[in-house]
Length: 185
Image (cartoon, rainbow, N blue to C red):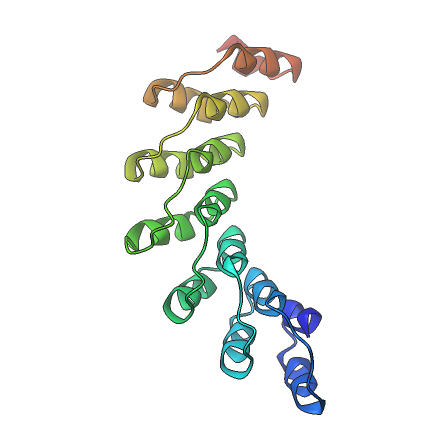
């Protein structure tokens, strides 16, 4: 059942449910949510008792499945962890990041890892948005890892707009990885 749910095969899932009592786990809904199969998540919610874990919302956020995140928020009690916002930020899912911010009744919060990971992956729009709307900020790792990855625009923006600074790793890694324009800057 987990595999059918993961792949979004609702017809197979329904058939398996009717032929005999099938063993299923929370992984079914978790995987369906991660893969954006809202119809499967809804069917499992209404027809099975296994439920899901916080992985359902965390992974739906990770992959940018906002409608699944919204549905889980409204209909399930498991919630998510701080990783939901971190994963969304790291993967440039700005619509999901904004949704978490707009729903202040979500209590998971976030960590500096959200901005650090967004910077590392070169998602300047997300970095700016988090800087403006969240209080967690970032660490020196944001600038260090952005430099390591050659994200010049992110490095420049962080240098001018954050107080965390960087370590010698920033220039050393940029030079090692031959990010010459960043080193020259």
